[in-house]
Length: 303
View 1 (cartoon, rainbow, N blue to C red):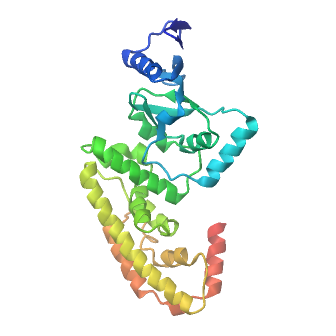
View 2: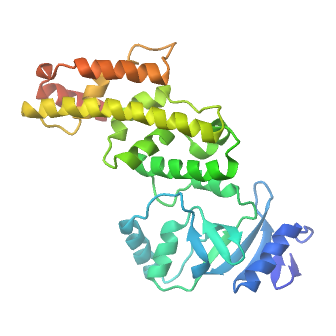
């Protein structure tokens, strides 16, 4: 352990790189406090542990929407403990300005509690923000939240790294179908993504094209899913007219029309799959559906 400036440096024999020291000075020049500059225990990369003015920190603009119930729960827990024990991660966006890729809800809770400071681990490498966002465990994702987060991240990367392929960011996006679903959820917030995901998971692959070009293909894929969903909605409406209403109905119909059911070794392309799905939905006979079929299928699926 050694003292350097007003902060502590770990390990004692180590010497922080110039850009880490410059960030430390920048934090203090803008009213923050650097508590330590240290190497994290896995990759031994330099990071800064700091207290930052709360008004200088904002969530990255491409992450999930704020959940008011989750903020309220966090606020109540922090208030009950009467202390904040879970530092956020931040990256610098400029002098006195920071983004957190994983602390949206904690920031909101602290603001509700009128806190002036937030304890933060500052990572000098700004590109790491996208990787951290992929590992975000602050609040469990549902499919809609994850897909919207991924498509927002996609657009941000498109502006910063547009020349790189979509495939190069497979770690950040996690699953290729999240991208397509993200576009769908933006167009139709109540879209039944869970019903389509078993098909999308098998045929939606990461693209080798640069992000700018790949985005156009993603839009075409979303249009194909949208067209199939429109036909699916007509089929559901026909079933409801017969007095059959069940929450599993969309998944049931798609399972019946799934063109991949017998595809094992050779899986058709995305475009071919959705063309076949569209035709199968067009031919679907609503008169053959019984409530007991739906109930039985729902039980099997839940098991």
